Length: 147
Image 1 (cartoon, rainbow, N blue to C red):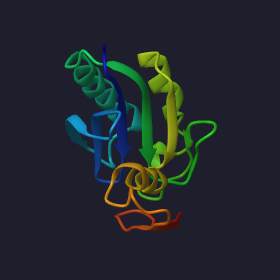
Image 2 (image 1 turned 90 degrees about the vertical axis):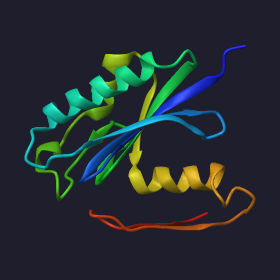
Image 3 (image 1 turned 180 degrees about the vertical axis):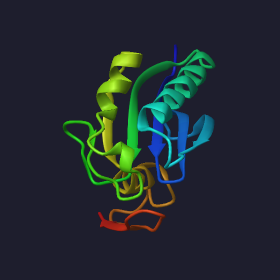
Image 4 (image 1 turned 30 degrees about the vertical axis):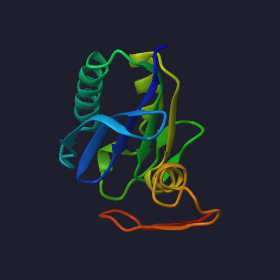
């Protein structure tokens, strides 16, 4: 029986991380590329697409979808990165649509801190706890969550 996997893409101020993860949250393959703030967002998106395609060719698993965590603010329902303060060329960028069209896989977009908190809650050291507090501090905006 073929195991399921998903692709995770984390778009940040300084780098983009791309990983293939299994159903238990284990990272199977990962790569990073720099986010050059001077580059046009379309140039970086082409690199993301190329690296994701390479990653997908390396697996025989059933890839069921792609999750994108990105710096905010963003509109997760529309799949648009709105106006990140440190990445001016990413304003009003339809990242979900571009990834879905390229790979034909269900794609979701969430704030990177929200996505990290959910991942930690389900797969991290907090998985046996009913409630957690998660704080993210990075080069962009900061955020905290409690579950």
